[in-house]
Length: 322
Image (cartoon, rainbow, N blue to C red):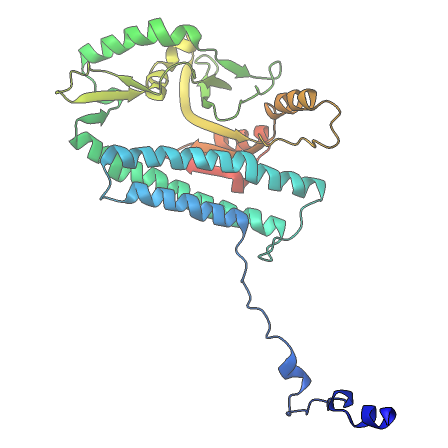
């Protein structure tokens, strides 16, 4: 009785197998994922900084805010090269770099970064020279050159150079007895070519723009009402380079700036003394390899090639700017 009841009980019945509704194997597979579905981290960061630049381009914002966004953009880009680009180059050099999620190979990624960064820096420079500086001039803030000064202004700036700038300038010549000097990261420097009048022989020298002085020197006293004029520290030094090389002819002089690897590499798990590891890494960072060379766009090909060779950068890492 018990056996018969168990045999006919509904709970004891086995559910039938699902009926094939005509679906084949390909229909059950997932659709292939779209190409380019991932965004690259580095290029995405450049897109973020582009939006900062677009704020500087926004005419609805106040003028000094737009100028401030120009400075923020430039500082951001400096840090990007010092950390992100430097880290990528280091991984490539050590053979640890792998393709990104977007599918770009490491060297292709560097090429894309260079292409995008060149375009952004040119856009940044054009915005300042063609839009922001003229608009500031309309508001009474003027950037002038040496040729635009009268005799009285020049005499005052000559005195300022002699008293405040000349004593802290140290030109360094490059010749067989003096190797190419170390160029600190983000410092502004002059690449100077001088000639000896008697022989016509040319020599290269480097002059560092002092970081202790402001980059813009006020020519006029700001009374809150009259227009104010500024001349750049670079312009003052360029005009007075003959004071640094007496008896020699200054053939050409161009400013340049080097960005170096300042990324930190400290493994907290393996470092026995974290403080000592950080001190060692900070010391090494001061002498990190160059990752970008900014030069004036009117520099001669010969002088640019000398900087490229001595600093060990590639052509893609050279950024000519006005």
